[in-house]
Image (cartoon, rainbow, N blue to C red; front, side):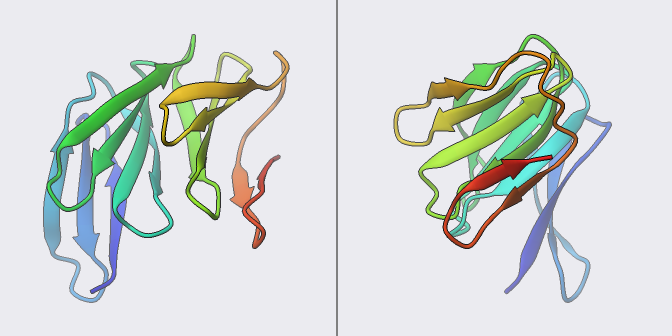
Length: 131
């Protein structure tokens, strides 16, 4: 079954079955509008980013929050997993993009302040490109 998550202004992430459009589940925990949603490459986890400045990781099957990975100084507008699932790239209106370690839930790299990141794209080799 193919599914797709979507962030919402009602502070939830909803998981939809693509073929039918049926809602499969709801993730609750953020305190403001959710802007960024990203599936882990194997589909086991979902990363979310929000106006509350947090980056959260969820278990896609149980719908439970696994961790608050970290926080930016402004709302989180974009998220993407690396192809191998080892890193998560997030971007914020605070002018930073951060790369988080999936296994340690810690920041491994912070891009220079003032970096403009309006989108992201994972490549076949697992690299993440911010544009």
